[in-house]
Length: 121
Length: 108
Image 1 (cartoon, rainbow over the protein chains, first blue to last red):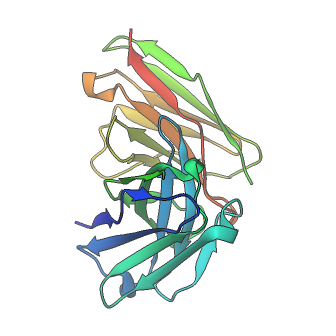
Image 2: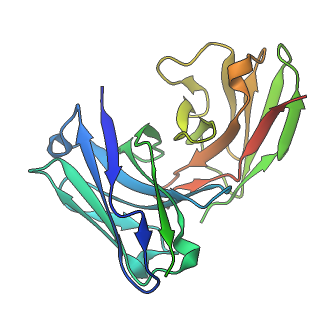
């Protein structure tokens, strides 16, 4: 059973960089075949896909956030990470990590529990 | 970007009733559509993928249909645990993933 767990600061100051890590257990990122994504949900709102990374390090970002997003992978730790720069209050959200099969038309079959990040001074 | 629209925004029904939720895409997504259920304080849970395939462990009362731009999620007989928010999601032609705004199914 694959499990994903987000970790990182719950409070970030405006203009700083939000950094989160997702630790994967029950499966190896380096085995390939899956995209590893970050998705966020603003309080009381819908879901927004941020971007994904493949085990090789190739990435694909949501064009609306691309200029501020970096996703990286550490296969030795079976983790992938999100950095979102120049944050504002509008980046306050629950951030989820999730897995999808690396094919067109894919979907998210495993999700982390989510972590709330608040942007405030 | 492909925009997904869901209707209705809220569906008020009683346990045992049939729920019919709609998702419409701004352009064809073939059958590349998934449905998720989300309860308060929880992550979304995959219900249906490729428009009509139930995910592992999902009860048979959940079914999906449609292709192209129009999709439907049907819950044949609502159980108390089915009252939640439902999202559709697409990822067609290697474009960015997008989600619909959600339909809340609440108790009448």
